Length: 289
Image 1 (cartoon, rainbow, N blue to C red):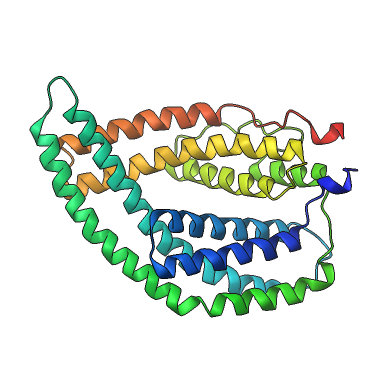
Image 2 (cartoon, one colour):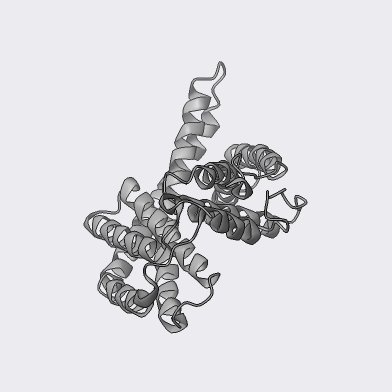
């Protein structure tokens, strides 16, 4: 069994990430700047990861009704924050592409014209999305603490429950799709976009689950790092893919920026697929403890 210092405390962790989420909500209520948005989205993901972990554990007090209420509130919040975040990323990518072209030996004026047009459209969309997010936050900032309070009160009898590092790793790898629970050899890399997105989401969940372990849990933290690399590769592909679709809708598929963004998406997909083809395995195996 893992040492006590290496044990995760899922219910206590849930209370901590819920508090982080409430702090992030307050920041976004003041002004939904990029850092505040990042903290908000990360906090929602961490809460969802803890709730997913609890769903894998037996012998907890019945809490499905309270869990579903929290998940319902979080889903709306995460989607609204995600729209603003995506628009921020897209505007940055457009600026970066325009700056790269400007410094090229033979700059293309059409690229800068298309970039200005596309960024103007996204600036309007960002304002609308940020307004929608703040309206939602005003509605939910009182409801979420109550929902969390009911959930945590229901789970209170099991608050001290500890999860050993080997068991946590076993659950993470099992949920990612590994049958032998010693490493996660990437499943056959699919061609279907929906399946690729599913693997990207699984990697994100696995990362946050592994990061819920204490810093002293070396194998779990190493596993979190591996999933973070996979998540980053998948996220970069997703960002370019969405931007290529947005540009094609606004400028037309034959526009130079649309074609460039599609090429970036293809390149990022190759990198993501390479990451997916590598096994995920904590160097310090859970079975060696």
